[in-house]
Image (cartoon, rainbow, N blue to C red):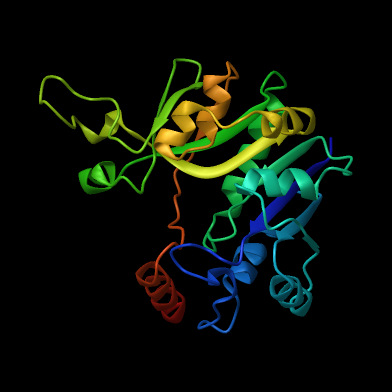
Length: 245
């Protein structure tokens, strides 16, 4: 079974333009992500799917395979589908380009999830919460699953709602979604051909397209989470953490 990872790298990010090529640590953000990903043991190859020649040039500097994709894609998943359209991979893993501190063991975990559950067409990861503030944060996506660890719903709202306390209950009741996905190749093509769904448009969460169209998403729970980089403040905090290492 061939497993490849694709890292979508959109240059013109809305909240932090050019973030994948920020380099205050001495390495590009996308380079940090790539170097974390190559530590995973389950991957046969890694491709960076770019939308700008500057990203392609930067990838050449640190020896990563990169392909140019259309600038018109609405999501990273659409960009990935273009990048792998001629690939013979069985499983494609979507690693966010703005998560330079991704744990390689999480990449292996989602690969194992797909290997061990051949009925799964799409998979993702969840983790527990450390505090109530993160549960309240709409930038951190929450997930609820059934007894078979299949995703029921994803939301920016704190779910489930605890009626007894009229809000957020015990933090052990909540799961944090980790933005890494795995797809079987044929499902990826089917998924990206679907129009955006109503729930996806409302929550701005593309995985809801799969659920709203009747497809199931397998999940695995992991311990380690990492912060993505969407704002200047988050990048500054990342640089500070890197400087302490």
